[in-house]
Every structure is written in C-alpha cells, then in structure tokens.
Amino acid sequence: MFVYISMHPNLRFPIFITSFATLVTVYYLTKPICEIDDLEELYTHKDCMCTSNKTGKSYNFCYPDPNKPGTYGVKFNCSFVETVEDLKLIGDADNLISLSDSIQNEDDVVFVSAASEDHLEHAMKSHASIREYYPYNKYVLFGLNISSKGMDLLPTDPNFEFRHFNATPYPEYVTNWKRYHFKGLVMAEAMRDFPIIWWIDAHSVMVDSDVVGRTFKEVSDYRLSNGYSPMFSFINAGHTNYAVMHLELLHYFPTESFDLLKSDYQVGTTLLFVPRTKYSRKIVKWWTLCSLTDECINPPGAQLQCTFDRNHFNWWAGCYRYDQSVFNILVLNDYQNYRKFYMGNMEKSFRRLY
Ligand SMILES: *[C@@H]1O[C@H](CO)[C@@H](O)[C@H](O)[C@H]1NC(C)=O
Ligand SMILES: *[C@@H]1O[C@H](CO)[C@@H](O)[C@H](O)[C@H]1NC(C)=O
Ligand SMILES: *[C@@H]1O[C@H](CO)[C@@H](O)[C@H](O)[C@H]1NC(C)=O
Image (cartoon, rainbow, N blue to C red):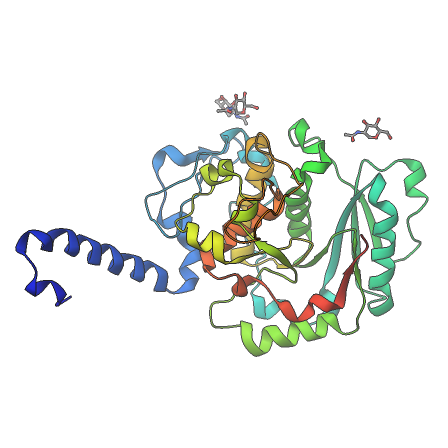
C-alpha cells in the first residue's frame, strides 16, 4: 500500500485498481465456506430464473461463478425445471442432513452403483467384494438397459436392490451410456431416496476391511470443520483438470483460475461419499442440469482417450472426462484446493478390475 507513495503520480491509479482488485479477491477467497451453500440465492439474475409450471416457484438456472460474483454460466434450459424439481434438487427440502449426521452409524451407508449389460459381471464382482466386509448394508444397483438374461446374474441377497434405470423422464441422449449422462442422474435419484450414499463404479472392488469406519474416523477427526467438502472422492485421477478440459464446459461452469486447473489434481468419480447435505444437493443440481444437456456433459468432439504427450498438468491431453470433469469443476471452484474434496488414505483399499 505504501509502495506507490514514491511513484510518479500517473502510475498510482492503475496500481490502486490492482490492489483493490486483489483485496476484493482476497475477501471472496477468505469468506467463510458456509456461504458457498447460499451463493446461488445471493447472486442471481432475473434472466436466469426458470419457473415451474407445477409449483409456480422460480429457480436459478445459471451457475454463478463463486469467485466472481456477477459472472454466470450459460443458462440451462427451463424445460428441465420440473424434472429437477421431481428429483428434489430444488425447492423446499426437509430431509437434509449434516456431514456429522452422516457418520453416526455405519449401517446407514447405502452402496450405490450402475452398470450396463457389458459391465454386469464386473458389477457382480464389485458387489461380492463389498459383501466380504459389509454383508448387511443396503446395496442398490441401477441397471442400464439390462436384459432378462442379465437379470439372471443378479445375486439373491436380501439387502441387494436392483432398479432398472428409467430414462423416460429424460432426453433420449442420456441412453448414450458411454457418455455418462446417466451417472449424475442416478446419483440424483439415489440421493433423493437415501441420505448416505457410497458410490462405487462397477469396475472397482473393495480389498480391505473397516473402510467405512476408517472414513468416518477421518471425517470426525479432521473434516467436520476447517472447510472440507461433505461430498468427497477417494481417488486421485493422476492428472489435472486442465489436462482433460473441454472449453464448452466452462461456458456452463465458468472458472476464475486457469492456474488452479493446471496445478490441482482432478479426483475420480469412481468412488464418492455423498451425504444428502445442503452442499451435496447444490452440486448434484448443477451436475444433473449438465447431465440433461448434451452440449455440457458430452460436448462436440469430446473423447475419453487421452494422449499425455508431455505431462499430466499443464499440457492438454486432447480428452474429456464427462461426469468427472463436471464434478471436479464444481467442487474446485468452491474449495480451490482438491484436498478439501479428496480423501487419499482409503485409495489402497480399492482396486480396479481393469
Ligand atoms: C429447450 O428445450 C425445449 C424442449 O426440449 C426445446 O424445444 C428448446 O429448443 C430448448 N431450448 C433451447 C434454447 O435449447
Ligand atoms: C410451462 O408453461 C408454459 C406456458 O404455458 C409453456 O410454454 C411451457 O412449455 C411449459 N413448460 C413445461 C416444461 O411444461
Ligand atoms: C437396450 O438393449 C437392446 C438389446 O438388448 C438394444 O437393442 C437397445 O438398443 C438397447 N437400448 C439402449 C438405449 O441401450
């Protein structure tokens, strides 16, 4: 602040502007994290609102950049408002819990997965691996177009529930399973029905004991305060967000810091802890709107196959991670540090089947 006293007067104005901008930025970055939940109510714009024909209520359908109030993403189509309302991601909520509520009882954790016919055998191995350690927790598998032949593979387990994923309320392109529209939608349906979800991809198996207990302990020891995300991943993707970025995603979910996209790891959506908190509901709302919008979850030219020519950080590898890219941009924007939504200690307790 005192630096410019000795400067030429003409130089003072731009420097003042810069310091002011820095102060504003510092203010927004150091705001208490609880306000993240309320951001879209604080910052919205009348052109961003969508009104439900069913309830007459209006909701914000443009994602507000949490680090730059007044900046919004492209508006999602208002034709989805009733769908999102039916999923209970918007409107009154009387069934939300806190992160602390979610770690009271290991038996309340519901394992949730989804599989198409070609992943069903993996899903059954994944289910069996969970049963080694958790014989009685509820396990729900969402089937993506599973045939009656596939149904024969399902276990006879009283705590196992099979649900055919019903895509009829959604646009037809969500049945393009390899583009992962389904994942945010299944997450939303599961969150509507169960307060504490442990998501596990069909190709992931549990290989160690007391994973839930150890997770609960780590949450209770370190994560109930200090600005940790209640919704978190157990997997480090091993590359940054930048390496697998598609610019179209940033039209829907603008972000302030390319440096952060290049320096912070992306986390995997293979394994996620999802308690039905106010924050998780907000994340799943935007994730769902993106999943309902082909240009957002599956933008033109997007492909899974990467070419990591130079490095996994500030070199674009020509690929995209669909649901994983979406989840990461949302939580990174809020927390600005991947460690706040990543729990590394449990990583060795799981193995990939391929
Ligand atoms: C919104 O969705 C409706 C119904 O599917 C469609 O007719 C309309 O073209 C969409 N609007 C935009 C801007 O994409
Ligand atoms: C809601 O009502 C308006 C006006 O009647 C109509 O144009 C619009 O298509 C309706 N939206 C849906 C999703 O039904
Ligand atoms: C569902 O599976 C049947 C074959 O079992 C196939 O003909 C159909 O195209 C599949 N539909 C989708 C949406 O994947």
